[in-house]
Image 1 (tube, rainbow, N blue to C red):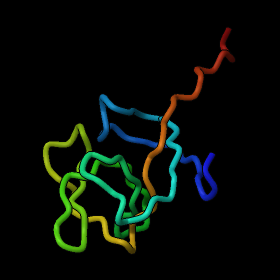
Image 2: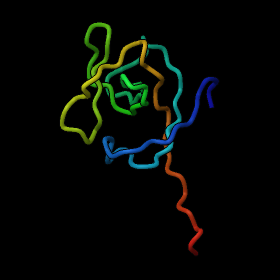
Image 3: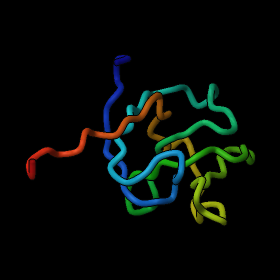
Length: 100
């Protein structure tokens, strides 16, 4: 992994069918200036909870973001202050074989 990268487990259905419950995201720090429409990113909502959504549009000094499975854009915007990183990859953990 790239220095500064980390893995975080997703939850929820807002990014279906792209990703789903328990997806593991590899998050890589990327310069704000290198972000582009359609990038999958992690940012923090006002409560500090990490959100994994797609960049829709740059609007002045902030990005409008939206989950692929959501009909509306997010009620919050992504700014330099709440931006965490770009999702560089994702994978699903193997199913547990405990019951076999």
